[in-house]
Every structure is written in structure tokens, then in C-alpha cells.
Amino acid sequence: MQTKGSEAVKPPPVNFPLIPWDELYTILADMQLYPGDAHRILSQRTGKPIGIVLPADSVRTIFRLFYEDFELPTPDSVGRALADRVADIYAGASFDPSPLLPTYTQLALYQKLLSACDYDSLVQADISPVTDMAHCKARFQVTISALTNFLRFKGMVVGDFQTKLDELSETRKQMADLTESARSLQLIVDMLSSSQAAVNGMMGRFTEETKEAVAAYHEALHVQDSLDAEQKKCLAELQYLKDRVERLRYSIDQTHAEIAQLRERLITKEDSDALEAQCEAVEKVLKENQQRYEELNRTIMQSDSKIRSLEMTLGDISTLIDLVAQYDEAAGDLEARQKGVEELRGDNDAKEQETKHLRGRIEALRNEIHNYDANGQVGVSADDTAASRHYARLVAERDELIGKRQSIIQKRDAVYGELSKLEAREAQLISAHEQKVAGIVGPTQTLFDLFSRQVSLLMQELRRPV
Image (cartoon, rainbow, N blue to C red; front, side):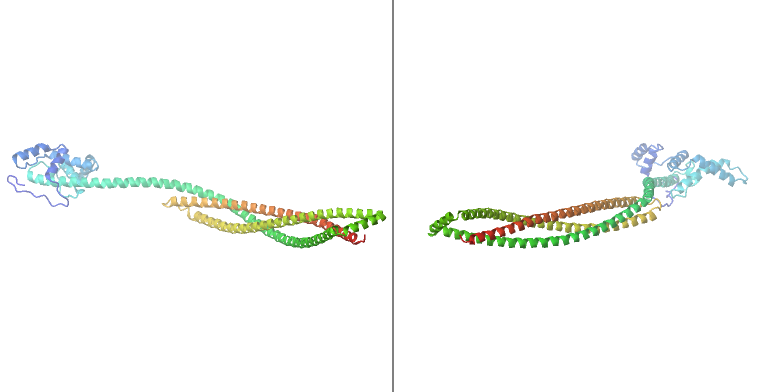
């Protein structure tokens, strides 16, 4: 830029970009230190750039405003400190430096301000009254650019710093929450330690109950073996009774055949032509021997009653066959019950395996809780939340295992109750079978003997000559 009696002054080399004058005019107008619109209108009318005219007070005001934006200590406090320093430096001087103190103080203050903005070339002429307008304008552009660029950079830095500060505040809140969680976790760990003895006692009782259950199970197996032996014996007796019934049925069939033959013989005599003659002879004989006829008539009546008794015996034998069929059905029911007992025995074995598995799970849970007691009291860390969730999961698994153990105990008691019911039912069936056999075999044998005697008497009477 050209001025009268001087050449264009170049700004000193700096490490930051210089702000154009149009933007500088806008900044000065915003600070109410320069009528920017009037200057632009005047420049457009004349066609020549109008030089800036800023008195020293305006320059100091600009520096003071920027200084306040930097949030540095107040100029008064800095000025007092610098005044004391200058007084110490010139304590042995031959002249009084007091008139120079305000100017030196402001220069040092503004040099400190601009050195923070990466500009170290501020001199006394920059804050003194204007003598060389071109020189003042060039250096003023440099200083204002340094301050403005730094304030822009500061805005970005302050924004990032505020973000980091918010993140730090959030982190502190999270640390407070973690501290509270750690305290709660420590209380839970203390409660767990206090309940460890109760858990150990419960495990001891569970072990004793398991041993008693195993002993009772072996005893039930022994009883079951005894019942199996008795059942085999009953089946052998049943087979013997079936064979005897078959023999009785065969004897009855033979007796029926003989009776049929006798009836055919009687019918043949009644149908024969000689029946009339024989009847006349019989009448003669009856007339001759009335007493013999009466005895024969009584014998026939007795034979009829014996035949009716025989028919009743045959009905009793049919009843016996029905009872044998009922016994077969009871035997089938008994076999089904035995299969149910075998299935219950298999379920009991499966429950015993599940009990062993649950015992291993409980032991693993106890070891894991022990490891957590040994390693969980380190203090507040980023893993406390995960540790709390892990501990809650361990407690839930422990409660689940305890519930499963109670369920197994209940199922075991139900199995033993079912076994007791089956034993009682089997004993009732055996007793009822023995009673039925005793009630059937005795009367059947008696009836069979009576029937044999009656048939023998009847045959003797029929074979006796008339």
C-alpha cells in the first residue's frame, strides 16, 4: 500500500494467516471502534482505499477487550506485579523510572498476550500514538489477525474441552454408581459368608438323607426280590390248580358221556317192543314183591336227587373255572404292577443320577463362590457391574439347585409311597388268591368225592338184577 513520502510496508513474517481488511473492518465495527459502513461507502465513492486512523487509546482498548476474552488475570493485578518487577530492576539506576512504568507495564502485558497467540514482535510503537500510518496499519493487521485466529482456535479447543469435561462429569457419576454398587456387593458378599455355614449344614443333612434313601432303596430291592420269589411260587401253585381243573374237566366229560350212554340205553329199552312184556313182568314182580318195588322206587328218587346234586356240582365247577379266569386276570394285573415297579425303579436310578449331577453342580457353585470371595474384594473397578451380575446369576443357580433337590426328595418320597402301596396291593392279591383257592379246592374235592360215590351207587343199582 502506498502513502505520501513512504513505500508500502510489508507485515512481518508470521506462522498464521492474516485476516483481510474487510473482515477486520467488520470486527472493529462489531467492537464499536470503527464505523465500517461509512468507510466502505467513502472508499466506493473515491475509488481509493481510505487509511485507518486509530489513536493509541483505541489500540489499547482493542488489546484490553481481547485480553478479557482470553480470561487472563486482570490488567490491574498484572500491572502491579510488573511495576514491582521494574522497580526492582531500576532500583540502583541514576534516574527515576516512574514515568515509564505505565507504558512498560502495558507493553509487557500485551506482549504476554500476543506471545500466547504465537506473535512475539509487539513493540512500543504498536501501542504509541500513530506517526507512520502505513507502518501502524501493517502491524495492526498482524496483531489483530494473531488475536482473532487464536480466539477462533480457542473456541474449538474450548468446545472440545467442554465435551471432555462433560465426559469427565459422566465418568465421575458412573464411578459414584460403581462405588455404591461395590458397597452393595460387599454387603452381599458379607451376607453370603455368614450364610456359608448354614449352606454347609444343609449339604451335610442332604448327604445323610441321600445315604438313608440309598439304604431304603436297597431294602426295597430286597423286599422286591422276596416278592418275586413268592410270586413265582404262586404262579407254580396256579399252574398246578390249572392242571387239576383240566383233569377234573376231563373226568366230568367222561361222566357226562357215561350218563348219555345210560340214557340212550334206557331210551332204547323204552322204545323196544319187548318193553311192554318186561313191564308186565315187572308189574308181576312188583305185585309179587311190593316191598322190593318200593325200595327200588326210593333208589330211583335218590338217583334223581344225586343227578341234581351232580348238576349243581357242575355249576360249581363252572364257577371254579370263572374264578380261575379271574385269577389269571389278577395275575396279569400283578405283572403290570411289576412292570410299573420296574419303571419306578428305573426312575429312581435316573433320579439318583440326577442327584449326583446336582451334587456336582452344587460343589462347582461352592467353589465358584469361594473363588469369588477370594478375588472379589479388590475394590472399585470397571468390572464391578459384571461381577454383580455374575454373583446374582450364581445365587439364582444355587436357589435353582436347592429347589431341584427339594423336588427330588419329594419325588423319592412319592416313589417309596407308591412302592409301599404296590407291596400292600400285592399282599392283598396273594391273600385273596389263597382264600379263593382254599374256598374252591375244598368244596370241589368234597363234591367230587360225593359225586364219585353217587355214581358208583347208581351203577350198582342199575346193574342189580330186577
